[in-house]
Length: 145
Image (cartoon, rainbow, N blue to C red):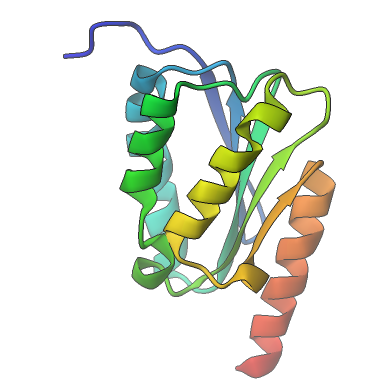
């Protein structure tokens, strides 16, 4: 049982074959532990039905403890190998999102840990940029099949 209540809010939406996990922070470890069981079943459902993309969107604040980020990173290590239908992962945080600059190194650690090729990952500023990137990747996958 967690010592603290979760801090942060999760909202998920699906835009065609793109899952958007919108995280409104700041966050603690308990938030990430509570969010994972809500997001991963959605990912697994998409994985079973063909190519898809994932956006990790931060709103208000991206701040999280290094301990919490270590847990997130370890939980997602090897994601790309375990999810071959995922064409890409984009992390989006606008300049006004608190802690964006501080957390950029953590975003990069996360993207390296998931194991995707650099061409399949992106750190960007907006949801529009992220979805455009993933739609292009999805279109490219459709042309290869």
